[in-house]
Image (cartoon, rainbow, N blue to C red; front, side, top):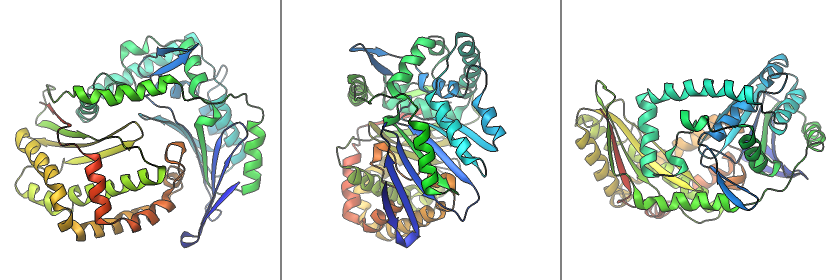
Length: 429
């Protein structure tokens, strides 16, 4: 077991990769009453291809999300009931690039860990139960399709990455759901639901050696095989990269809204760096974008005073191994003014970074403060202790990295990230 001690935070994180490949991260915090566990798979909606008998096969959109729902449902019981009976709250969610299963509890922790691992590592799919679940998820899809906030976000990302797995809703479509059957689910499960592609993170009240022994005893009985970087994964990555030549630059749709909902988004460039450098790169952009676009920014205040934006304004960005983007959304009667204002602001950033020094220094302190504050939340900690795709760099490491970041680092990061031509606009009327 690898031990990482963070004296300044009085915390010690323990890592171990089990014989079957399962990655385990443990952070005992015995001054808390609760324990929070998160089992993360490096598998999400963008993984829409598998390799079977040396042939690449495309799987229906929404399969990762559908699997997440079905893993709770067993032949004669639902795992949610087992968690409930053992005093645990359980949940799960699917994103573009991961699937997460989690629980929190104050008792029966060992039993709940076994329920979690058994649930994810012992699949059961049947025709009747699949049909029932399709109906449930269809309603979910229709609900989000009628929500302008959801629609503008996902449609804008689709325009940035056209005809790829990122151009599809995480839940899929009504048509794609009806293409899912037992065979597809078992094939996808065998491809991605293997220990080497999983990270189990546990934070809270437990005894370290006893917890690790319990996990090993559970895992020693599980069948497994080695995870391989198949051509299907490389093909998905290639499709995402090649789509940058086909951006859907401008899109307008009608939902009969009282006021236009407008988005402008920039597609980020991919970088080939070490885990540490990628983390530093992402933190540089977080600091910069928060300095320019947070509610305390003088730039944003000017746009407020000019009535270009209002309280509906929001922005978010994602930087992942196979994709990255930043998106700005606002409600306005003057979409062209909003779009041009954001474009001008983004274009001016390289020349403004030096003058932003005080804002950047303040933002670094604020981000560190937010990170330290989140250390009081077991849920937040469980999602910030690292995973396969970031080389297990965690929240404590990030604070040290943030302290070392300077203006030159931020300039380099922005230059790597942005190509001013790679933007799209989207308007819902």
